[in-house]
Image (cartoon, rainbow, N blue to C red; front, side, top):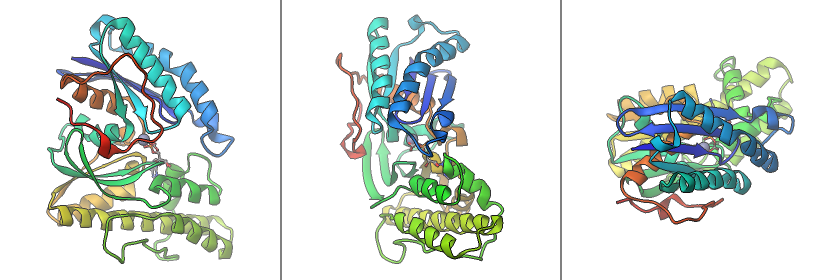
Length: 338
Ligand code: KG4
Ligand code: ZN
């Protein structure tokens, strides 16, 4: 079975083809950084319009590169939510319509299910069950994953997502959108102990997160600091250390409380090298193992949607002739396919 995957939930257009026997046959991304950079963040209407321009040409490009025609595709997976409604509608309309014209089934994929299954595309994929830390621009979740579609939320953020906190702090320090990767680069030049930020909600039991206080802490620290390059780098470093420490503490706790030994880390912040390094070391010390997608598949992409859709389509799941787009959608409401 060969599945075409389409991702358009936010500010990246992603397309990929996943084949049951050959694995990933091709993928491509069109980033919207240039479209949104001058506004300092994602402008939903501009995102939708850019997806309209990019999605079909990207599908053509990926299919040509994989020497595929419509006759070679047995199913289509598109991101049905959560995300920006206009952006979602572009991918779901194109995906559903192509599936109808090619006479193949279509399935609407949950974006976060795509993220948490992304390590399955790597050479040494994790076995179920595992715990998953999903850290993106819109979500921060700790989940117990018993199998495809069988998810229990262990903890989540009560306010800002980890990626959102990265982006807001980056903006404060004068870094351009998208701030997360830029802040991480700046932090490399920062000194370790000049500033110390709190590790929110780690001093009490539970697996929930709160990151909005860190942003406020950054604002106050910046206000009192000399406005020079070293202070910016030192604040970036202190902020990143605090987020990484907090995530590491909660991941250790999640493994301890559930008795699970495998941890998957995915979503945009999962591309952060400081987080990857620390988690790998700490979880290994605890006798566990961490699984990551390659950094390119931590952030939004079509490959994870093609793969998640393949898992559902090959189990016989398909949908009627209607277009699905759900801006809000809880992972816990998903069904186990088959
Ligand atoms: O998963 P993703 O691509 O999109 C959403 O589904 O939200 O995540 C994007 C988020 C943004 O907040 C971005 O700043 C953050 O992930 N991000 C990073 C890094 N790369 C992306 N944050 C910290 N360090 C990075 N290297
Ligand atoms: Zn995402």
